[in-house]
Length: 293
Ligand code: GUN
Image 1 (tube, protein in one colour):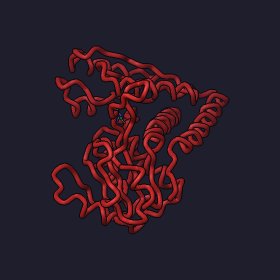
Image 2 (cartoon, rainbow, N blue to C red):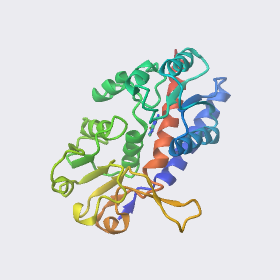
Image 3 (cartoon, rainbow, N blue to C red):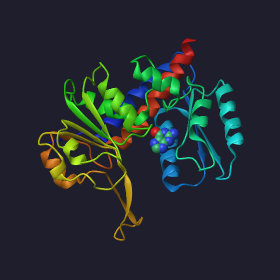
């Protein structure tokens, strides 16, 4: 069994990004600038956005965090988005999800200039992704592809099962792994909450990508011998023995599943760090696209 170590790979890629930023500055180009909008006080979202801002600093990007109250109206949020679209200093920006219930996510996603959509959620980017055209890829699936590529995990002709059909992870992952590309060329099945007899699918998978959000749901009996297992889940499970009162658990029962795998991602330290790194890569690319114009 080999670990798909996202923490280590992230560090390597972040060094590459830092070097690229230094080269840009030497050439008289601007520092890449990422903005993030956070609406409300969701604890996990605050942690994620805080981490994104911290990582910007680590690679030499400028960052701007716009924190808005939970009762911010959709109109106000759209005004902030419009300003960021028009601000020529901002190369890319994200609106952290989930948003409060009174805000319509598709309306927000479509309002973002797709050339600044470093989350890769705009329909223009999703459509281009499906057609294998240059675009911003959603950060989590892009990070998973990078993990597979840099560990030379074979994908061509493999049977892949993705669990979860979200716009952020599962659906784009299923499209990316089915593309005529490398990594890619898998035969993909997309499973979700209405799938019957889920284990019949998971047991067939050479590559199993789990993005369910249910702690330790995937057990050893659900996994094929020699499978590649990618665990996207990260759930806070109450744990009184920890100082912070919880531990982080993936969707996979790591201890019993890992011995059966050829490759597996740990939680934490697998997919999570790669997501942030992909966002940084997209932002660097957005800055370079804008420099070329
Ligand atoms: N919420 C969970 N994952 C993501 C992500 O990749 N981007 C944004 N904007 N929100 C998220």
